[in-house]
Image (tube, rainbow, N blue to C red; front, side):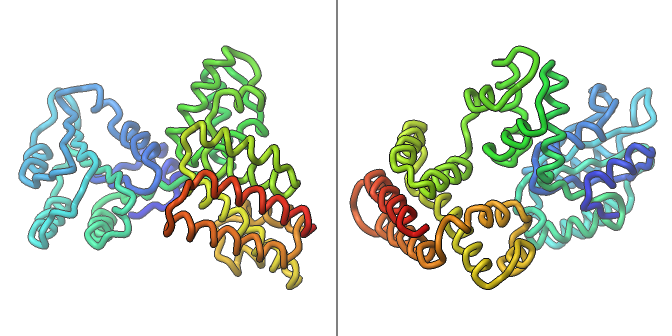
Length: 342
């Protein structure tokens, strides 16, 4: 069985359905480790009936010996093949692995965690997923959507004795990478600072270091408003935090490319859903943000801004010079352009 929806898999687990083998993989390492811990259950707390094996250098003989071992004073033995890397397995190894999955003893369970982001797209990874589908549960655990991340943060804040509003949680999701472990760490830092009670945006901004993309979006807003001083001050803060100019430029380019697309879509009489479909956005969030700003700049000015960003990128990568100065000069020019192109 294959599960691509974490919540559907959760219902099956809570219903008491078990499989001889589980494969946990996907882009969200936090969820892989969370579900592995949940599936290990009581076996994890017993050194006699739970065994962890190194998946980076898988030894099929060792795995089979562990599965064959009878549980001690318990009904089952749980074997955890952690951080599985099957890239070194030969075709014969894959045949042996398939035979092993088909013959797991009733008193044993095998839990495989594959934490590499490339696992699901690699040829051998796809074969492993198919094999586990035939004999157990292959579970893809991807990054949760914004709404689920908001609920995750609010529940986490409550456990830590704090109250995080929906707006505060959404702000935290916007300024941090969509990585649940990082979000949990940042939340713990804010809650420790707050002590207890309500967490407002001011406390979040005081303790959380925004991701480059969030800062670049804020930078683009200052540029669009024509605030040269504000934009340069924000650039200064990013440099102080040791953000690379080329990374700032890349994130800023994404914001202005989104804006250019939105201006082009509006000019063609298209709405947000059509823009999402035309340009292949995974969600409407970025497209909606761009549409909100599309009225602040003409299509011609937006095209010019994207050209300036491309020229700066080429100059940074091909010629000598201070990248910081180039980015500051670009910021001043973009601000002036946006002031003229409204």
